[in-house]
Image (cartoon, rainbow, N blue to C red):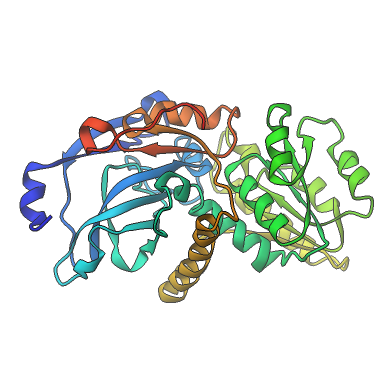
Amino acid sequence: MNDPRQASDRALMTEVVLPGIVEPAGLQVRQRPVPVPGPEQVLLVMEASGVSFAEQQMRRGKYYDQPPYPFTPGYDVVGTVAAVGAGGDTALVGRRFAVLTKTGGWASHLLVPAAELVEVPAGVDAGQAETLVVNGITAMRMLHRIARVKSGQTVFVLGANGGVGSTLVQLARRAGARVIGTASLRHQETVRELGAIPIDYRTPDLTAEVRKIAPDGVDAVFDHIGGEGIVASFGLLAPGGTLVSYGTASTRDAQGSSKLPVLKLIARLQLWNALPNGKSAHFFNIWAGKRRADAFQARLDADLTEVLTLLADGAVKPQVAARLPLSQAAEAMTLAESGTVTGKVVLVPDTAQDGHAAPSGNPE
């Protein structure tokens, strides 16, 4: 694209807009002119953007710091640079990058800061790379920077068939840890293949089932559910163990404040940290430290590059639940919320609009 300003006058892009608190069918697909990158920006052509739990919360108005409606969701994206802003590095054009966006990823084209691009290794499929952007960073940091899991330890992963959970299982096994993970009966074989010992999440006494495997408790628990169940998670820890909470899925459909469940959870974790039992409890926020932009981006670059390298080397198996075209974002959201898939649902460009073949929406 030699002159992106002229191209934007004739080219249209597609974006999905969340207009307010709606059911998935209420998502709106719109078109507008392709934007022009400004200084220090690039124009990214989306190749894959994920449907994460964050978007499920956002459509309910339950994500902690979501922007005002209307806005375009899309927590992370993988795409190819089509143009750079004035004075930008033209060597970026034509190369594939991953970006952590929080919002804006559900669009055929988007503007992102050039400084936030993380290159995807050559030969890596865009959809597979996408599953490991926010999920890979989250799992890597929780496992190694917070819980500091070591070989020979035992960890417990709630939702081991999910996007973050399945990544956690693989990274923990790679670190030499034994993994116990919850999943529905239909997903237990997949969880077992990833290397974890599966437990049905609907088991009446989940604590007792975990204790059968780890009588003295576990060294780390990774809990995305929150709510009152967090008490049981903390109780499963062995002396010196670490609880890492990274979500409040149990309150997804609850009425009221979007912030209160998170604040109550953090207060509870802080209270537990004051107890003289040698255990620790943490709430993981991927955006912590964002105010120190350079240091934040340097850590993100390092962590995401490591995860994508593991993917390129075959050390981590991506869990792509399904690929659906951008125009079917409502169907993708419905599928992601159904609890019937393993891994992450991925949005890809539409064939006619964006010039790319849209893979099948069937689970892979």
